[in-house]
Amino acid sequence: MRITFFASKNYDKDSFNKIKAEYPELELEYWETELSAKTASYVTDSEAICAFVSADVSEKVLKVLSERGVKLVLMRCAGFNNVDLDAATKYGIKVMRVPGYSPEAVAELAMTLAMSVNRHIHKAYIRVRENNYSLQGLTGVDLYKKTAGIVGTGKIGAAMARICHGFGMNVIAYDMYHNPDLPLVKYVEMDGLLATSDLISLHCPLMDSTYHMINKETIEKMKDGVIFINTSRGGLVDTDDLIEGIRKHKFFGVGLDVYEEETDNVFENHEDDIMMHSTTARLLSFPNVIVTSHQGFFTAEALTAISRVTLDNAAAYLKGETAGTELN
Image (cartoon, rainbow, N blue to C red):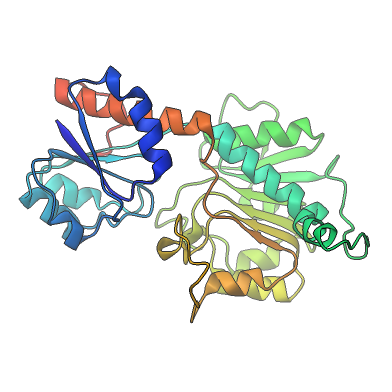
């Protein structure tokens, strides 16, 4: 079976090619272009395509893929909010994903962002490069004995909870489904978490029920001086309301690895472009905000796990077996 990879970078090719010999039944074809209705129309002789978190896997695209003979969509990521699962089922296309590649990778970046905005590492780094060793404006706070509020306690949220506990923090959490493997966490209602947390970190999927869960109303319920971190999905946060909260000095610091505008930017180099209208530029104008490039997953261990689970999914499909990663 041939698999056409969309939006493949050199690191994707390297990680998949390292284990390709273990799957002689699979042929891998790498395309740099992103998946869209137009690029899907160029697929030939591929029963499967592989897409990533920023791909357009809408009904329009799935219809074209179906017409090109595609029967399998392999998402090399955990999130699937960009996939129209009902349409995939209608066109007879199976969708599979990588549900857990390295939860520690994302959780560790979340804590890195929290520590960085807290201790103003981004500002201190630039200062020292310019031979400015002033400490003015670099005051942070101890996280020890502070309260960490974890929103979503799946594998990544659980890893973040353990990290916060290791820092000596009081860890509380909100999730509709309590994780029995987290005795160190006290579950509370969302309003209680917002009102009492010194650090709030989002670790939940983007669904209709969670879209813009962080908005003007929920921001107002937060403690003044809270550190806010999002490494999950940009759509969880109403960016305009977040910016208003930053301007009102609600936050001590904000760390974002994801944001609403990221689809056209993520994983691409725009250093020579003039961004005519950019939410990212507005966020970066604030001295207490750090924005990274959706790199929470980006560790050697995570890339290896993504490659292996993706190809295991394809092999299971070929054998007619159930992998437990199917979405429809």
